[in-house]
Structure formats: structure tokens, C-alpha cells
Length: 216
Ligand code: DX5
Ligand code: ZN
Image 1 (cartoon, rainbow, N blue to C red):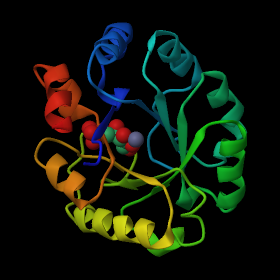
Image 2 (spheres, rainbow, N blue to C red):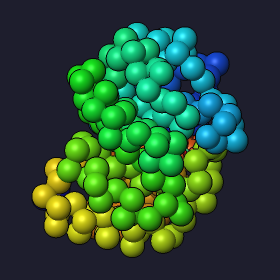
Image 3 (cartoon, rainbow, N blue to C red):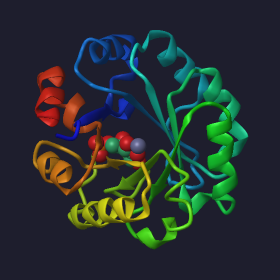
């Protein structure tokens, strides 16, 4: 059976108690910790930058899964490498030289992911699918936590799984946005490997138990 992984997004954590929330994730069954970086240009919001990510990295004992919602992500790969990130995902829509950026991420020794907005078709991955370690399908329009899951994402996940199998790619499928216990099982069944969840975890009365629900 395929492993079911969960990557909680700290965008929904309590930034006044960030250390407490990271320790909670450290002692949970989560697999990675998801860091959402927003630039106010590619997405209509700003989240946090490197000082916060450095602080998270000092406390976190799980691999850091960085999601760059920004233009020119290549300018910041050395900062992300410096915090010891495990994986970095950049947006297809933000990278005219996607092949180069994916190569730069791998050369820096990190896993390279490509993220697709809900309206971006899968065929835009045809020429890169065998070079990436991960494809992140956005199941909301990026920029905000707590949005409603876009139901077509389930079929898109299924089609991406087929595309990966047919191409011989080893990319993992990560789904990001509006993920909760209401859609987790369907997403894994459709072929997802990793589910990102922010509000579903941090708004739960028992976040660690919610992570277990999402993995089960
Ligand atoms: C959206 C971010 C997501 C978000 C997920 O722009 O990329 O990672 O934080 O949050 P929820 O699970 O609340 O949709
Ligand atoms: Zn994200």
C-alpha cells in the first residue's frame, strides 16, 4: 500500500506561539512541515520570510517542505538551502525558465517540486515531469489559508497519477489547499502521496489526532 503523508502548513498556526506549535508537530505523526512563502506579487498576500523560517528551522525536527508562491524564486534558493530545507516547490506559472530553476534546486541538494494553480492544465508539465521529484496540485487558488477545496482537484489528481505512470516519472503528488478529513481519503485514492493541511489541523481541538485522521 502507498504511504500516506501529511505536511501541516504553519500558515494556520499561532505565530505568537510558533515554538509551541512546531514542538506539537515534532511530536505528532506528521511527515513534513509545510512553509508557505508569499510575495504579494505572484499571489495577493504576503506571509513570512527568512527570519521566521530560520526560527522554525531551529526548532523543527521534521523535514521542511517549502512552497514558494513568488516570482523569481531562484533568487532565494540559497536562503532556503541555508535553513536546511528538504524540498522546494516553485510555481510553473511564475517560472518562464522552469527547467533551469528545477535544476538549480536539485544542484543545491534539495528535492524539487513544481506547483500548478487550479486553472493550469497538466499538459504544461509534459516536458518537466521526469525531472521533478514532486508535483504540487493547488486545490485552492494560492494566497490564503482556510479556503474551500475545489472539487475538480480530485479528477486532476487521478489524471496526474496516470500521467506520472505513463511517463515513467517518479514524482510524488502533493495536494495543497482546503484539505480536510472530508476529502483526504478520496485524494489518496486518486493517487495523492502527500496532503498539505493548515486550518483543518490547527483549528482542530486536537491537532495531533487530526493529523492521524488525515493519515488513516
Ligand atoms: C495556500 C497555501 C496553503 C494553505 C493551506 O496558498 O499554499 O498551503 O496554507 O491552508 P488550508 O489547509 O487552510 O487551505
Ligand atoms: Zn502551500
